[in-house]
Amino acid sequence: MTVEGLTKIIDCSALTMPDPEAEVTGAYIGDLLSWVMGRASEGDAWITIMSNVNTVAVATLTGVSCIILAEGVTLDDEVLSTAKNKGVNVLSTVMSAYDCAVALNGVLR
Amino acid sequence: MSEELIFRFNVDGDDFTSAGQASVQVKKNLRQLGIDAETIRRVSVAMYEGEINMVIHAGGGVAEVRVTDEYIEIVLDDHGPGIKNIEEAMKAGFSTAPDTIRSLGFGAGMGLPNMKRYTDEMHITSTVGVGTKIVMRVNI
Image (cartoon, rainbow over all chains, first blue to last red; front, top):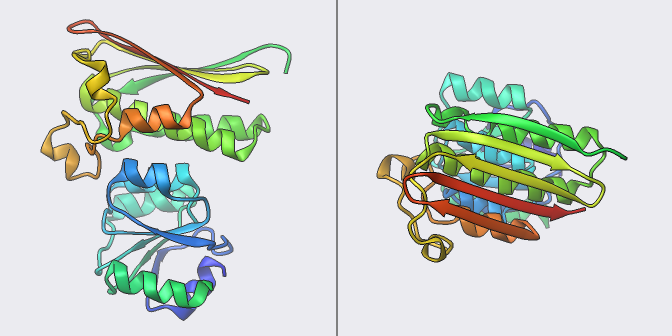
């Protein structure tokens, strides 16, 4: 499933999608950036409510396929343009992290 | 690669939001050198943690990455307050980071343990009031 495919199936919208063909291979939920950096796998959709510029850096370094901001969290313009420049896909959903993971589980298996 | 390559970065201690620039650049450089993806991931995650530490605790510093045929070495050098008790600092969950840093998603006491976890060798030398030097190696 590509990130673009994901946006068509689960209830979310793309805030920026510079790499729509990135393959989503799993999911990880976390807000502590060091924890996420140690545990998230390449290709994961990373569900979080943390939306500062460091979130984008962690996404770049771990190679996650996209960030999904849960609970309706959005990005400010500066962070958004950083994500765009770094090629990091950022989606936003009104779902809770749990509901989002459940939805992902339905489409990834 | 017959000669070793060295990348050197000044880590700006004033700007927490730009922390990570050196790690992202190293990731790019290593990719251009054809280093395998898992090695790049380990190096860049370990270096990012170190970079963040230098910004949070030490007011910045210098990061140097050496690439040889056998390993990639990351040397982080700062003139911050130093680490009082290295053994304690290495424990997962131990942190002296202020609340402002926690609200940005750091300060969970995972930095040093992550650096150790992602590297094959890690040595810390630190003197209170003088600074800290961390040398990490990831074997290729």
